[in-house]
Image 1 (tube, rainbow, N blue to C red):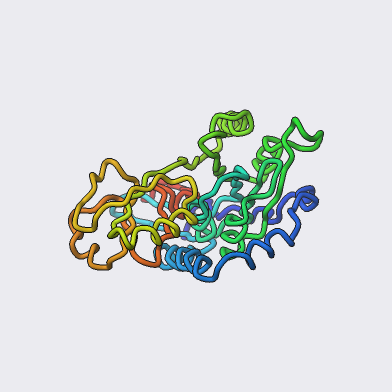
Image 2 (image 1 turned 60 degrees about the horizontal axis):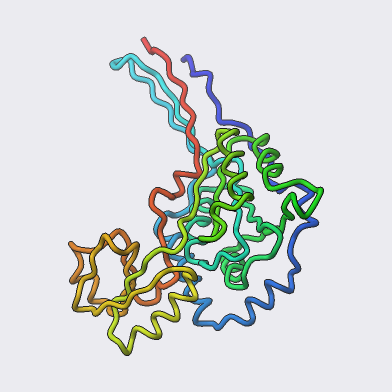
Length: 297
């Protein structure tokens, strides 16, 4: 029986570029950040990571399907695999571990290796170090910008990674840095390389569905998990305008029953204050499909 001239691509190099090793931040910074984070806050991040594993599961490294149909007159094959690499560029002042994990875990669950996180010039905030530690993401580096070093730039790193195969670039600027030269240059590099890029949107609006005596504690947890987000407390009996908020966070479990047919795109309950979902950013974004098609008599 004839077969299609098709086979999955060879495995790409899965180790980070060797020159990055010298740019790892001091391990003591991550250890100190972890030890100084209260257990109940670490638990919020652990719940978020567990939720993503539950929601998406882990994709197989390679999936191949072959179909031959004499009745239809076609034979085809489809192979799906993770991209060769993912690079996340994190502004050191970015303060939302919730949004960071919600973007990186889909890459992990898609089977991407390596997933690299780089910060321009300075290590990330302690809260981000804790998030990366709990997610098992160890490829963290501090890369000097061109103005500070004669070594490889962030754009040089992107170009080097692009030689390994198709990848993804994730940008995490702050409101202040989204149009800064470093991020602007990365966007230009991605366009030149025809590289798929995703960028975090700073300062989302959160609705806190809580009574006055509950709102303070909820606001503290959300402030820790979402950093720059804009919060507004709303009575649980009221329903905020869905168009005015990016997500709701509720204290009472019954909100889910009451809002079963009337809730915004994101509604999270107690214990899930560190959860987030980025629209259209799922494990599928980090996988590629290849097709081979021919006529089949």
